[in-house]
Image (cartoon, rainbow, N blue to C red; front, side, top):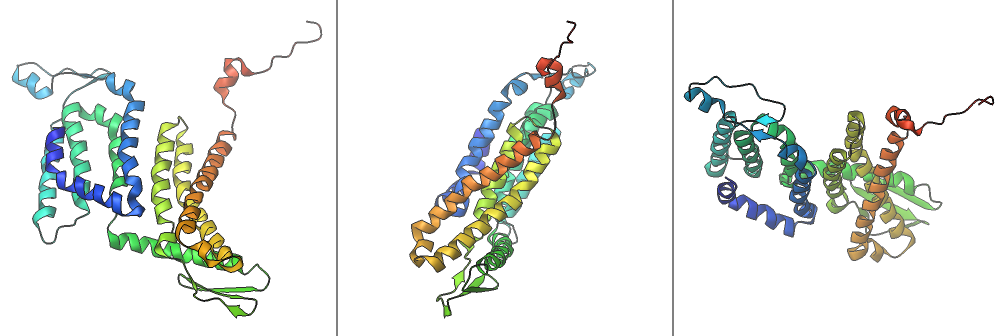
Length: 311
């Protein structure tokens, strides 16, 4: 089944890998399948504890009534076959139809994988592997128009906040118009104006950080509300880091040489935002873990027992 899926979706796999190699916005795509495999490896004991039993159709054909499943038993589910056929029909339509939507072609590959797991392993196997399968969606590049549509608001937010912070410097006046920041320093207008380009939108950091945020929330044993907060915090943290990047670029542009805002210096500043993002994320995780005392640890003997003076 895996070989057949690989042959069927060979063109989509080659196209995605080519985009990972040529577009830096999606270079993190190489890591996504590896994370999915690691998720499965982390849950291997729970997955391997399942024992497959005869499917209900075979039991009926043999003249026996299907037995209820035990806690560690599973069996094939023919709904997966129906979903697989529907997915392949949907993929074929998007492939041959002039009105087909290219984004759904690689998505169909992920849906087909889930359908095969459901067909061969049943609901209980799918319940233990659904996140590694769904995690592959982070490797599928968004359509260009949606990607640009998401970057423009983020660029405007970064330009507005950076402008307000630049205005705190004596002798510096900044004004933003959309994604362009006009700067006047000591009575002299700096040319060209500072443009918050698409590369500075923070979208690359956002996509990477959301994917890693899901991974961290999944791997660490935490209460559900911890995981929800950590996952929701990935977006504002990415936005904050991008604001820091744009503001720092503005100060470098004004107070130092403009060359430090371009080329390798610009890329290095973008990479420096990753440690900052993980630092903020780690602080949030530590803060939530420190809010409450684990009663299980106290019951296990971590508490302090005080003896009376008579003893």
